[in-house]
Image 1 (cartoon, rainbow, N blue to C red):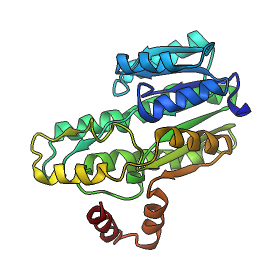
Image 2 (cartoon, helix red, strand yellow):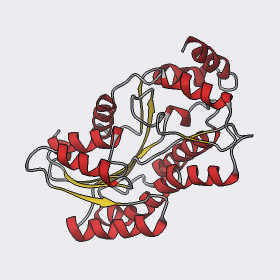
Image 3 (cartoon, rainbow, N blue to C red):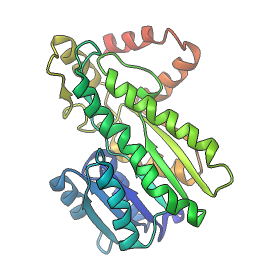
Image 4 (spheres, helix red, strand yellow):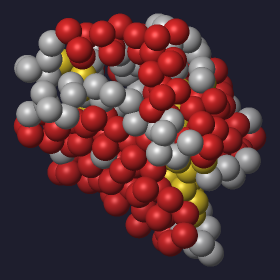
Length: 269
């Protein structure tokens, strides 16, 4: 895709899943890559899979750390001169009902999924605005459009990313910089298997995770392709993946009662 050729793309959470597939496809498109993850082994594997001759650097970054993210922006400026695309992709999930989740667990969830996106935008936005060119691509979730039981903290984080990005839509008008909110649904990554369970979790949470895992069917490479295609087209919102379109439509049709449909999907799973 010519849209990315020779441009600098920053990808957080590049050590697995959608982040790894974004890195591979951006490299194939000729982008220059600043790839980060807290998982150094996973990040090294992504680097190993890049096509020969790819222009890429890897960085260990904990996106929940304001200092590390702002420091990373300076590293990218030093190593690449600027950035053009910032994919705030890093994310985790906590399996826990709101009643079971501790305040500390909710803070951990929001620190990565929500504050990580906020830090990433705030750290890189000044250079994008200065050059009047660039796109912030924030990975929310279909659970940023509909709430899912047992994922309360995750829902808060992803609804927050959506609201933050939709505010940017309006504030960035006329600046040459744009923002995209991405809502994957049912992507076959390790996020469900790697979910942290609340210390108070019981069979309720394990049942939710088991059912949700059966709905993860879309390959991450397909999701990455949809993201890059949508960003190149200037889409403000990208909804893609197994059942994502259906859940998005149900939320519009049944804004306060879509939970019935969610429960039906659970039973079908």
